Image 1 (tube, protein in one colour):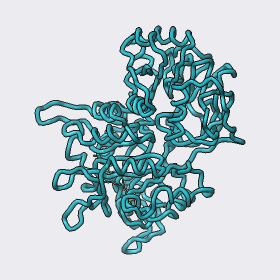
Image 2 (image 1 turned 90 degrees about the vertical axis):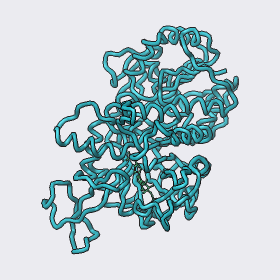
Image 3 (image 1 turned 120 degrees about the vertical axis):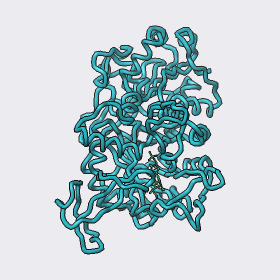
Image 4 (image 1 turned 30 degrees about the vertical axis):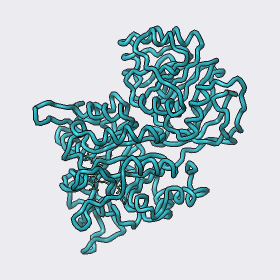
Length: 524
Ligand code: 1PR
């Protein structure tokens, strides 16, 4: 029996699914006594340090937790659940941590994109049964902007490199903490959890890496989902966002099954986009909630969900906040949420007012769940212009001349699934969303969507050079070489595809085999 400390973090369901997948039962701690009575305690955390410590205080978990930890009984803290073990955090000055380990939590100081999102390696610093059965070169999934800085060397369990070497896991006695997410790190992550549950006596230490670890480029499978005319929820795929063929919604398969296949084929992340989310309301008919719950039982890599995340008033006048929608998605197994149309409206309001008012979905959700959990999905369309100063939007020079030989263009943001253009350009949108607290940009391109003609390198470079957060290149992948091109000619941290995977033209494994030894990837 594993006792789970649930303070309302986003990844509780994912951790529960992983532990149950390993044949163990989970009991959620409802009060301090449950913590003190635990045989083994797992503390999953995602989000913001301050918010977490406050909730632990309000729920009177802090003292029982300290008592439990001081008794050196088996404990596994994940991400924030590990950071809580330290004395304080730069993410919430003045708020005390549990102080079990000396040292504090600090924000990354690197020129690389922050948050640090993706699959990176570990360098083992002390023998531990937690790594039994691993080879030592496995990669694990990270998603964070802050990392621990322990004062005591004896607690260092693993280090990882991201601009510089940082401590990515700690252990003293039976107390273990990892910055990386075993519940979202595929088979290697499940092995870590299994080792914690089994708590073997003997260490069969894996080999250690020689040299710094490297963050892998991510290959993401995207499932555009909507109901077809018969009301069945299907994975569909547009050609420049038009998903109909001979009037019918293209049906490329069932969301849960396809997601599982992509996990088994080696996808680093899986994204669900409810493409008619602007029309329906996620908390009303809830098909996507069910898709998430079922998928997260068998898929142990990060899940992102988008579509319809916005403040909403239903027909009975009941007002829902975007945060409530996000809550429901996180509690159903999502690791990140993606905001599309609403982000464009928020940025227009910001540009109008000249400053944020703290009420946008981006600000509210990132405050509670952390910026790393908020993705902005941009649906831009190219507009050619004769000269850079002929419009107020940010214009880029192009090597792909327009119909009248134009050598400049800007990228018009659209809402409602590409149906409505708005006077905001994609570069400005990305910059303002980063300011408001977004942690990642999903950069689609209507012009390239479904064309198999390759990713839009010019657009990706323009947006990537305008923000410091990670960018996902999306739209247009037709073969494995297009992935090599986007990772060689841009700094995009990830590349996403849909059509070629759904139509089984190029399996994910084939893309990874092709990229192996050319680009840093996580083997399939
Ligand atoms: O606006 O917050 O309700 O969110 C709606 C979400 O649905 C947005 O993220 C938007 O990108 C997405 N969406 C809306 N309509 C469509 C459509 O296709 N008609 N799909 C749509 C967006 C783009 C990519 C696609 C890539 C790769 N799909 O995600 O998967 O272009 O495709 P490819 O590899 O086949 O070229 P809101």
